Amino acid sequence: MSNDFPELGVHPDNWTRKHLLTLEELSVEELNILLDKAQIFRNAFDAGNRKHSLLTSHTSVTLFFENSTRTRTSFTLAAQRLGASSIAFTASTSSLSKGETVIDTAKNLEAMGCESMIVRHSTPGIPRLLSENVNCCILNAGDGPHEHPTQGLLDILTIRQHLGSLEGKTVALVGDIAHSRTARSNIWGLKKLGAHVIVCGPSTLVSPYWEKMGVEYCYKLDDILTRVDVLNLLRIQFERQNTKPFPSVREYAALYAMNKERLRKAKPNVLILAPGPINRGVEVTPDVADGSQSAILEQVSNGLAVRMAALWLVDGVRRKEKGLI
Ligand code: NCD
Picture: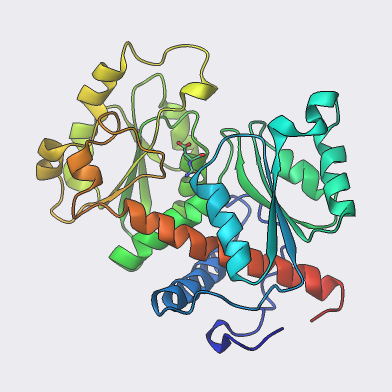
């Protein structure tokens, strides 16, 4: 390993995962390793140290079967900034349309020589399935409504930077809880790190079921505004719904859009997050999205740091397996 970045330290012995599939399965120690390493990458980025030679003999493939702006670009840049090569596989122009399975597709890409695959698919569990069928590192970039671990981590890293410890903080996830992988990854991560989580949205998208995950649920955003330290505003996942969860977007916005009036009623320093893409005027109004309490673009920068940390950590396990470090 090149020693161009001593602040990062050696690959930690207590990180033993070759894949990053969920936050549900991570321990508090593993979450903290990821967050701490991501913070080191973030600090280096801010100091202008943006390119490293840590993964120079690594090829990473983004295997996306669903659309993406941030996650795909961010993983691609993360790989490149670690010194790796990154290539993009596009499902719509591939042999999948000729009947090839996802597993065969992945095995063929691996046969060409790649060390990691970044996988996004509409079916929950596809990243895990691939991790059981190929030898390279698999990182889940969103599997249907199930999990989106790097999104959860970048949200948590952003909260940590603003509020310090997560312990005792109250975080509300607002919107389409039922279909949101961001919500699930946030809940697992936040709960493990000691935060109190509230899920809030229409009764068609939020239910008492969520109490089983150890979170509070509520239907009225106005009822919780004075109690929350963070509001994470989730997009309505229309593409994952067969029925209309509310009569119209206008009615949804009237009850759940974070706007100036609601911001005035909230705690003075409430932190506004959104995973993006944001629908201006639906889950958040432009003045709030672009306002001083919004950390939406900071989340995007942190995403790069989180993905660099994740790639470096899982690749270290792969290299240890091969006797390369
Ligand atoms: C999220 C996703 O794809 O799950 N976006 C993202 O990765 N930044 C959230 C969403 O699509 O609403």
